[in-house]
Image (cartoon, rainbow, N blue to C red; front, side, top):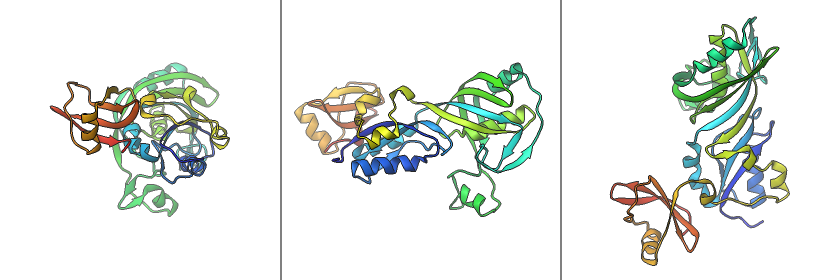
Length: 283
């Protein structure tokens, strides 16, 4: 298949890494210029946004979008990876009610300081944290401010709590689960995780891995997924944009998607009285 520019919304299945999905797309489209916009753990499933060729320039823009998850907590055990695939480090009894769970979950709405999990790709001292963990080396874990926008209790049965949560980028659901369990005076670990949304992209928009392997997909463009105001360039403006020049537009939006003859040319960003090039999508 001829390589091209665009975006794919993929429903990543459990037991695939995010890199596995990138490699599958790369092989199918015969290009190495493929990137994703937010890692999902192998245990997790759900929305993974893949950018191809020139649209890899959108990765940072798409990574910053808020994310929504449905997660399960298995109460009573703690693991080294903070999920069910890890080695059990501790066990503790629990005696809680649905009312207490709901109250505890809702107490996390807003900003709080979260300790990053040891099994993550965050770098400390030039090494990724999971490298310290695999080498049994001690390291001080970073703490970062995260924001929980919404959190809803779904159900509680036996030792499993299920909840839905909407968070800003960079929030580790495994760490959130650890902190929830601490507040419930017990321990717990992530039993399952599904990313149901990233920005405006939901599972209903996603294709699966078999669709990619069987060529049953269509690459999306920026106008399909970004809700930016569109502006159609005239010939003079097109020449300026192709030269990377700033242009004056009587608009107030932060980002503008520029088109010419219905083709996507660039995304420009507001810079006071003018707009400057943020990403070129076509030369």
